[in-house]
View (tube, rainbow, N blue to C red):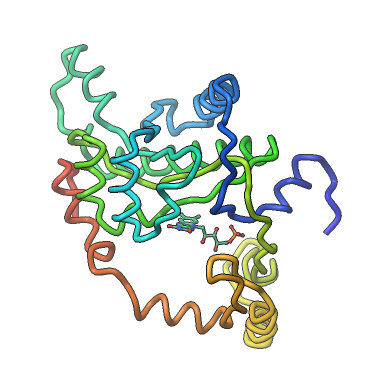
Length: 252
Ligand SMILES: Cc1cc2nc3c(=O)[nH]c(=O)nc-3n(C[C@H](O)[C@H](O)[C@H](O)COP(=O)(O)O)c2cc1C
């Protein structure tokens, strides 16, 4: 695919980077990245997310243990994005508001979306500077532990981590399912050649060498999918329990 702008060129070259050089991210670069995050679109303007920059070696180790991925601790920068209804609760209470809406599911999902968008805006900015980044959804392997490690108050919830820095590896582009099975016009409708398309994609995925698996060739997408489903982490499947412990009202 031909890039029609510099930004699109970089976006089309995206691949997760999991190993970084020793080069530090300069303070002024970090400052610019914080500003980019802060400028991200935000649901109803309420900015219901926060970011924890984890610099403490002990805390990084503990986060990496939760993730079950030791490279989490090695990332030059490690940011954890958090859905945050706590700060706005404090602001509203100072105005005399004493309702319960600050902890409803709308607030929770607003915060979750805001946090995810800010994380991707950060990632785009990071990649525009010749650095690399990777998400860590694995922080949710034990959200209760992450809440404890980061001292997250009630009415907050961890969403995703981002590790970034100057790349020490150049992974292959990971194949994606074609647009024809993902983008529809007006109504959801998988194409008639869906099965053949998946079979072709499975074949393409088998040609992908996964840096994460020491450069081993990948299984087909379908096999990866089933393996993932069969290895679901109970803690993650039952995450709403922790959401409730954090004071959010499921409202069901
Ligand atoms: C929400 C989210 C969570 C992810 N969690 C992890 C993670 O915990 N560890 C990891 O190494 N990669 C993680 N990734 C990276 C994906 O594995 C990666 O984006 C995907 O395999 C596609 O590869 P690519 O980014 O190189 O194109 C995550 C990505 C997303 C969007």
